[in-house]
Image (cartoon, rainbow, N blue to C red; front, side, top):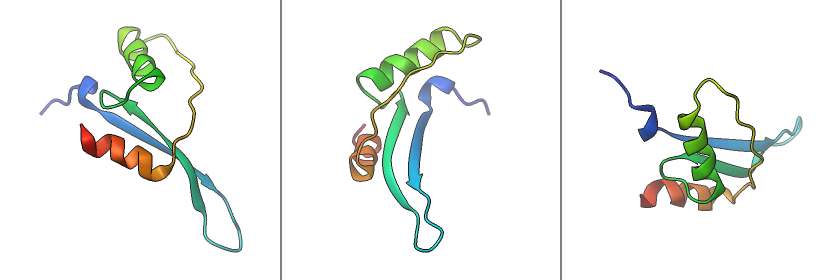
Length: 73
């Protein structure tokens, strides 16, 4: 079974590290074919040039908003 990288979605979660209490998610970023805007453009650029590093800053979304992106498409 071979997995097509173009069908992969990557969800990156940034977490607030807390030694005493619980660590809570600050925000999320979704990369992949279900993304939109700059996230989708970054994913497409990475697929077009697999051997070249492509750096991109992303704006974090609310964790619930990022989950909704993955479930709607």
